[in-house]
Length: 151
Image 1 (cartoon, one colour):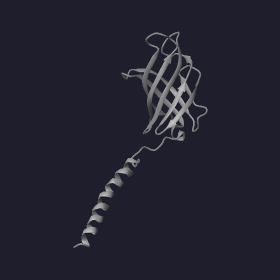
Image 2 (spheres, one colour; image 1 turned 90 degrees about the horizontal axis):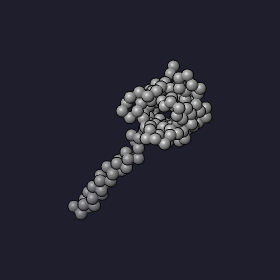
Image 3 (cartoon, one colour; image 1 turned 45 degrees about the vertical axis):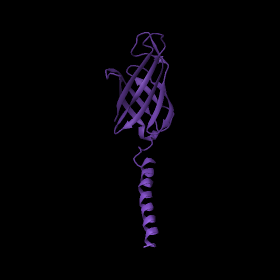
Image 4 (tube, one colour; image 1 turned 180 degrees about the vertical axis):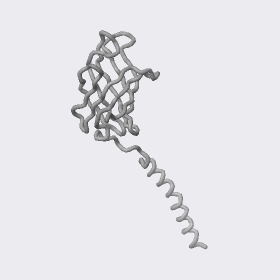
């Protein structure tokens, strides 16, 4: 019996340690999303921008490359605007555009638009913050955008 007690204690300790190890493994990211690569986003996207209530604001085309150079955003009947890739982290790519004349407010300029983009299935989705060159209450616009890859 005395020999059996240490064996039972060791088995109990081993059994207790196993679930803890499994929790550590799953906490380490077994189900974590795959990091986003610019090659996953590369292509032309037909995008639609909405305010936070979901009301449509405008549409545009986003041309994304598999690296950080040569990205453009084109509003209808406007020349392409250069897009700067600011950061790539986890499942997101952060971009910035501007300054440029506003397509929403007459006689106003957009100082910058910063957007966070995520690949969600076959859609590109995210949020944006547009800062206008005005000092009034409408100087910042928050919204979201969604797009489909163009053929």
